[in-house]
Length: 166
Image 1 (spheres, rainbow, N blue to C red):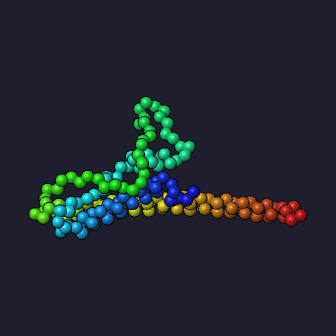
Image 2 (image 1 turned 135 degrees about the vertical axis):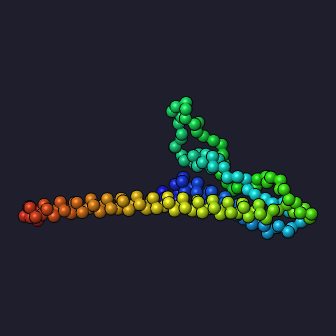
């Protein structure tokens, strides 16, 4: 199993895909700011629970079990897939030609999207650094074990050279 196939990375990948698609939709809104009768679009909000339940369902043989009545009930019925456009609230401004794109509103949404994307990138980097640190620690542990075995063999050879050669 590759490290990038772990559920944590799957969640990050889904969120980043959603952010990329949202950026495209917002860019289309800005590009059509002067198009008559154009209404702004946006994606349906990213539902973390829905994505998480899809990942849980994909993990074969692993299920949540409620061991105490105070625990949250596991499970869900979310599905994975492409993100769909959601309803956009009514804008406060509509141009005389029927255009309902408010540039300032789109810029705020784009800024939020960029900030969220940067956050997801930082989380991804931190997760990779954590795995690299564990890998380096395991390598150092193996080198220490090898060095210990070498030293034991060296001392045995110094004490009993005739027994080890024959």
